[in-house]
Length: 193
Image 1 (spheres, rainbow, N blue to C red):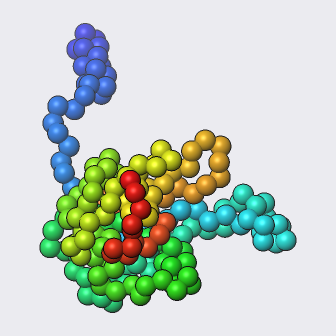
Image 2: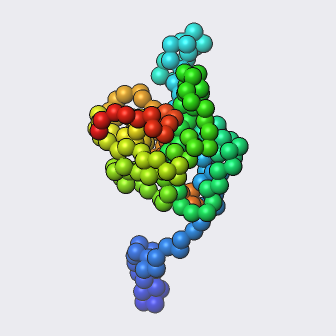
Image 3: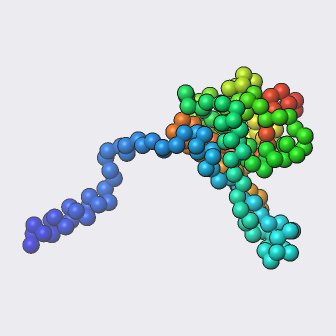
């Protein structure tokens, strides 16, 4: 009986004891381009047009994605497998709005302007960043948000608002992805900090 009681106490004590061994690092099994292709972006709400269809304005209609960016990276032969990268990823709706406004064509240079060498979390993007294209993204803080050129990096809803949450610090095997709401064009930002 004493043996059973002792064994029970030891078993229950070790069940709640912290594990002494460090967890084994594992691969995420997806490179940065594959992760972008499957990444779910911010919520899209029905808005006023949803009322006529029986939905509340604040109901979620679906999610924006990053498939246009993933396809453009592939079509322009941009290889993101040789090192660790940080991608500032404009969503499908951001690219569509850029094209609809008559914006500059999405070329390899424009795409490389969204790529920073090395894995950088959102907290590390508070200084100017050199891009794979060779240009520099200007960092500044405005409206209590971190900006690079004309884009808010990783926008999050604050308070009771119904604004969208943009993905940030999304890890891939060889990089980190941050969603942005606009297309960045080399040399287009001329504003102040």
